[in-house]
Image 1 (cartoon, rainbow, N blue to C red):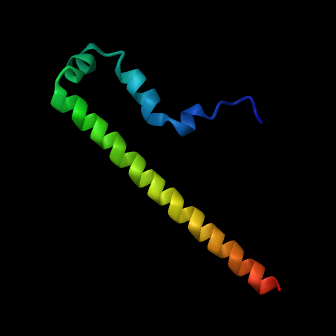
Image 2 (image 1 turned 180 degrees about the vertical axis):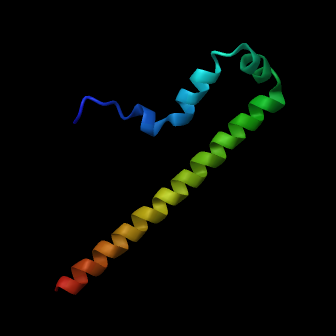
Length: 73
């Protein structure tokens, strides 16, 4: 494994939130329950979309590998 960390690729929202927390305006907005809930919901929707997309890609790869295995026989 290379010396580069995979965290920025795996958790970009977390890093972005940490960056935003540097700003007083953002921290003040998070006190608003509607704002915090909106951010939470958007992150959940993003991860649901990401998970579904990843699952579809894995299924397509498995199907392709299965087709390759049957065509080789």
